[in-house]
Amino acid sequence: MTARTGQAAVRLRVNLIACDGRGLCAEALPELITLDDWGFPIVGDQPVPLRLLAGARETTRLCPKLALRLERA
Amino acid sequence: MRGSADLSCYAAGPDAIRSPGTLPRLLPAGQPAGPVSLAAHLTRYGPLPAGLGRRQRESLMAEVGQAGLTGRGGAGYPTARKLAAVAAGQDPVVVANGTEGEPASAKDKALMARSPQLVLDGAVLAAEIVGAREAVIVVHPAARRVIDDAAAERTRAGFDRVRIRVRTAAERFVAGEASAVVHWIERGIPAPTASPPRVAERGLRGAPTLVQNVETLAHLALIARYGAAWFRSVGTSAEPGSMLVTVRGAVREPAVLEIGVGTPIARALDQAGGASAPLQALLLGGYFGAWVHAGAAMDRPFSSEGLADLGAEPGAGLIAALPAGACGLRETARVVRYLAGESAGQCGPCRFGLDAIAGQAERLADVRGADPGLLKRWLPQVDGRGGCAHPSGAVRLVRSALRTFEAELRQHAMGWCSGTAGVLPVPAGRSR
Image 1 (cartoon, rainbow over the protein chains, first blue to last red):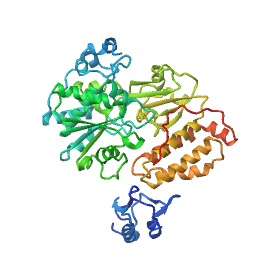
Image 2: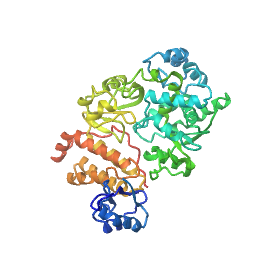
Image 3: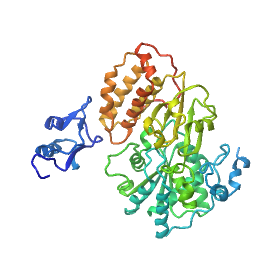
Image 4: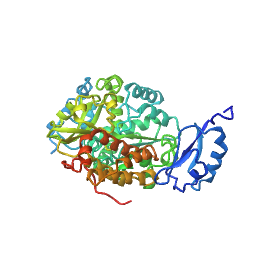
């Protein structure tokens, strides 16, 4: 987590039991979150790039079901 | 009839079972003859090791590790590691999992019906190893009475050092998943809960909880008596011990058998009376398992190692034989529709995605113009995307069907199907 172009030691994780498929997260952070054919978020396993870290953090706060969070990669 | 001849192996006492390589270990030899009584049980296996102090608890945990015992419920997790994780916590609880929600599998029901005392031995020992005061036995409704009677027999004999509580399991496919078992006991909801936390950290009433399949516990009860080297005298060095398997479908005598892990599949089929028709494929492991070509699998050892390159695993011990006259695509569609209906409905990709996949599988099976592109698109969208393994298991089954039933796929693409369906048991649907 040194260089600005590097990757944070965290990744996004969605709790699909809590998720309702509102889709806000994919609108807010299309770089890292897409939706499947039924409207539920697909988040990759890869660490969040540093340049997107602030946005990722903000997106976790946007989720009305608190189903999205950042965890240690 | 409970003829004494059926229990002749019991009269032989612990020396017979002790001799390396003897099978069966868990089940009484001979025909099913009802549950083995506590007295006959003790005659066959000898007494349970006396109350465990800290030293003995640790050495028994080490023995289980050396034995290489892994979970027999399907996931195959090393038992010693799970015991250690739970033992490290405060005031743990043990749950013996005899839910067996898998409709094609009968091995846990057979074990509980015939050797209930061995299961209870294992639950009690596991509780002592991790330092739990209580063991909850969650049993399929078919086994409830036998387990109740067996527990009462122990109480009358003043036998147990931990409290045994018996609960009837929910009859649902996902009800056997570890967190779903805990959820069911605690709140009457047979659905998985979000992980983390794992139940080993925070399970029943927030306590660290050991959820262990009943067959695994029965093995544990024998390792406690006879040790790791004895346990390893059957099976392979990488996957030691014996395992219960359910052999069904196109065999002459469908049965629950006990085999050494790594026994060739053909030999297991022979023990079930042999194939009753030419076989085209086998479903291995369970409904989360995989179809394989019968010819390719027949001489394979029934072990993770032996089946890995076929994309299959022993799983919960199912070997289901599909005769040449049946249509594997139709069988698969029936099972996937059932699995879609058994989704707990909590996770979107499982709830909507499995339903969509089942719909396409049915169109494919019934030659109603399925779109293979849609299946290809949806399988990865559902794979790995749930709070439990349910969606991934169903995807695995469909993928294996698409690999194995190429000839049918070509036939169906040309608009016809010559096969029958109805080999695998599929309980009537339910509405969520």
